[in-house]
Length: 197
Image (tube, rainbow, N blue to C red; front, side, top):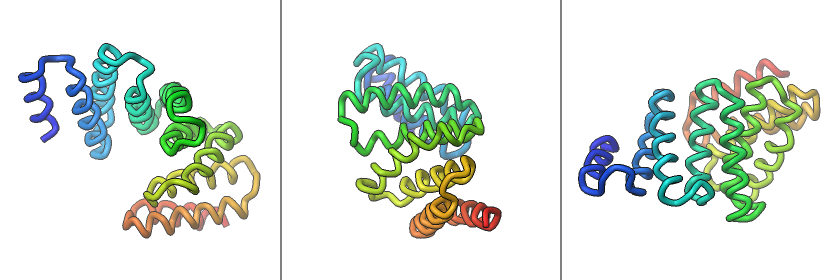
């Protein structure tokens, strides 16, 4: 449906219309959810190029697209590139929305996960602690809270910090995934808990 919507928009509005960018990025998110990350990356980058041309590289919408791009790059195993994308999103959101805005947790969690992917748990701690604080206070979606809680649990454990807190955070993440009925993610966290007694 998104592909059809994009084709229709291009036919009616022309190539490079700002509305094309919205659909390009929505298509990227859908493809990522299907595990088609390389295709997703092409679409999100196309959406970003259109947005940069029409709204500028510092527009708040660009921050959302940069964050989506970071998620895709993390999924593709390209953490350094992902982190650069998340950092650009973080800077825009902080400037436009303030230091405690809920959107920042997306970028901060992604930054932390990119460090974890590189085996740098110590560097992951600061952005993940900040994301955790934001999500604990403002996030209603249990899957988002769980993502950050579990990443922080892993960073604490791997950096040999507060391992009791790490296990408690992982249990919170499992409970949130259970509430969201995401059994595969809950099982993954449960397996981690069994391995980290």
